[in-house]
Image (cartoon, rainbow, N blue to C red; front, side, top):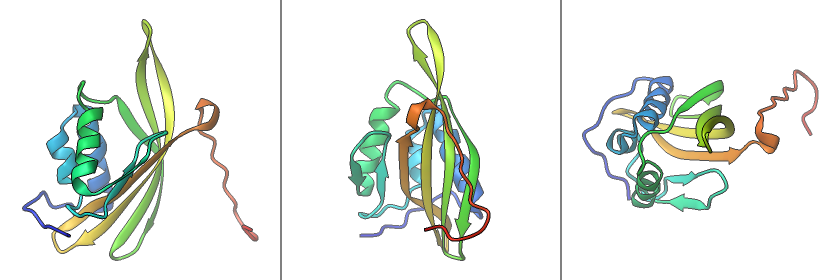
Length: 147
């Protein structure tokens, strides 16, 4: 069931995704969830976690993650596929996490999916996975057969 609420208008996928990471850094749950389409089919997978389906469940998962405040996070290495009504991005998330008395930078691979509505772009999926061996490696095929 899709619900449209009065919301901030994002004219581009880039604006919507940037607002997503800024809301995570601030720990602003309301701003974060304003970016999501209020729909029963949106989904989210946190690193090493289960698939969370539906706006209410996704909100609850972010509420739990942001319970201690913002997340020191930066998205890099952005790749995008965009059509007139949908977009999928892939980024490397760099998170600064406290470990003992120090901090450590952890890399996570994430894909974010968006749909374009008359009111602008909305997020419909966030999928994040831990990076093997802790550092992101990019492999790019320039030509030839992929499979």
